[in-house]
Amino acid sequence: MAHGKVRVRFAPSPTGFLHVGGARTALYNWLFARHHGGTFILRIEDTDVERSTEESVQAILEGLAWLGLDWDEGPIRQAKRMALYRAAAERLVGEGRAYWCLCTPEELEVRRKQAQAEGRSPKYDGRCRDRGHRKDGRPAALRVKTDAEGQTVVEDLIHGPVTFLNADLDDFVLLRSDGIPTYNFAVVVDDAEMGITHVVRGDDHIPNTPRQFQVYRHLGLPLPRFAHIPLILGADRARLSKRHGATSVMAYREMGYLPEAVVNYLARLGWSYGDQEVFSLEELIRHFSLEKVGNAAAVFDQGKLDWLNAHYLRVADPARLADLLAEHWVQAEVPAAAVEATDRAWRSAVVVAFCERAKTLRELAESSRFLFDVPVPIDPEAAAKHHTPEAMALFRELLPRLEALPNFTAAALEACYRGFADEKGIKLAVVAQATRVALTGRTVSPPLFEIMVLVGRARALVRLRAIFPARDRLSPPVRPL
Image (tube, rainbow, N blue to C red; front, side, top):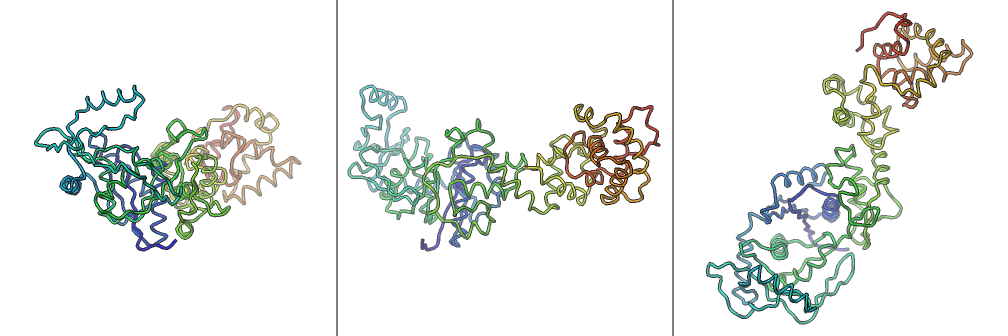
């Protein structure tokens, strides 16, 4: 698809956090702009004074920044552009294309209910259309004179031609009685003034499009191209909501997902490029096109997101994850002072040891928190299975050898354990599993000798002695790290 200078926008309402659906819309606009060397504009649609909050604005900015979606212009606030909307409204009134309506909300509601009871369309009946009302300080809404004849065809880049009968439209409101523009008015004025070439948004906006076409025509403005992205559904095929789990982008950050995994997943949630699943950001920019966006709703698959995140954990720089892991340890109730006492090199080693078994940073933090616990809570079933009298007798002989090791490295520890097992004619697992349970509290962990090094000599020996009854702890105590 050949284009001139592409200009697109993401225009959220600041009434909550940046949700998954909004994030995907922002991503598709951003990728489209970057693919064509165009401009990505951030516009905050904050004319709903009662529901818009500065906290939501900051949450949206934070979510976009976390995903790495930088904007070229903005954030532009609609609330600061009221003069622009009023000028457009006055022009429409002056040209006879809009009129003041003095009908009260109560009167409109009575007529709406009566129309429904009589089986008629509840749309506005147009009674103020030709009365020539002036506002004159009275509460009045400004309505557009819609074209009742013919039809409006939206040439949608995703859904193809979508046809609407103009007779189904009413003279909808452009300015409310308090002077605040409606969505369908402000969005047209803004998109035209900003030179938007492509409107890429959710397909829940399709019913708004023929109304917006009326405003474009009445103002004599060129139409942008439209592309309406299908909604995101939960596994039950209902619209994605909180009951399906987290829907806020930043909630995924808190759960330990990486931004590159979320971006990769959202890009593929409705867009395809062959069978490829894993994309770098550069690949997404290079390959993205609206032609490859499907016209059917996408189903959010938590398992696929987990799979992608696990992949990105494995290939990420351990030093980068080391700093992120520190935050998640604190969330996992590891004392902040203990986390602060660690250094990046040690945390990086923890990442390398544990990331193969984790889908998220939260899982990584929870599976490795035993590194800080003194004493470590031991699973009773694991202790019953591996701390048998026979194993403990052997372990009592092994312990002095561990204490005497000059180097507490993975290689030295493995040589010590294997030499002891060969000498006693036993399987390595007999003493190795007894050690694993003593150090981690469970039977499954990353490689044992790496874990012993991460726990550290002093703390490891304290934990190993602790599995014996107090009267049997013959070795001298070692102060924990």
